[in-house]
Image (cartoon, rainbow, N blue to C red; front, top):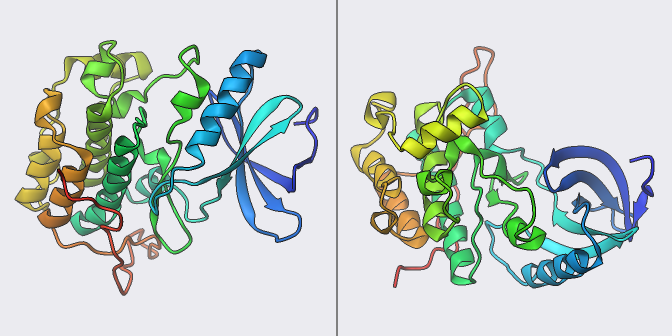
Length: 294
């Protein structure tokens, strides 16, 4: 950071909040309005790659859905593209699962159904996420779930060193296949599996071993791991985890099936002194943006 300016465009950088293969993510604040945003640097590459990154990112800025992270604008900092994204103050689903281990079935519905609707919108726009994980599901201060990092693979390009997260990867991708809309459905169902069972579907000692387990495609028994979950919800998640992509259904179908499988309830972010979740007093809409399957 020492080699970078403290100001980028109209934004003053405040603190590092994330780091990945594509670069660093910093929280920043608009100098005039005081609004908090996230700045993601896309590091490396020559002029041609940077030009294409800017072009692709500009196209992604037109994508708009209430449960998709918004790309506000694209800036340049010393030749590197910088994505200006919404900053979500509610933390990630990964952090929530680390605190609570698992969610109640109604909470899973309230997270997964709207994110599936967001994926359905993205797929209709010709976009594939390629790495749906609990870490990419963030919450606003009001508790609204938002899927982030949509289109990062497209912006970075085919030569980027990107890998799907082994714990949630589609077995066909783990075996070397290209990510598709069907693998996004699998990834989100894998996130639902983790939220219900308390563990991800693929789990071994180390990334390489976990990827090998995923490539084998033998799922743990979700019904045994989540015995209190409604049968219809378990069946919906397991259908979306089918080994054959054509049996998984679309993201729009998954959104509606999850919503109808169980009564939703608002996600409890606070815990009591024993670490048990404190239920919120009301629920919010979970199917905003869902399109009926064609």
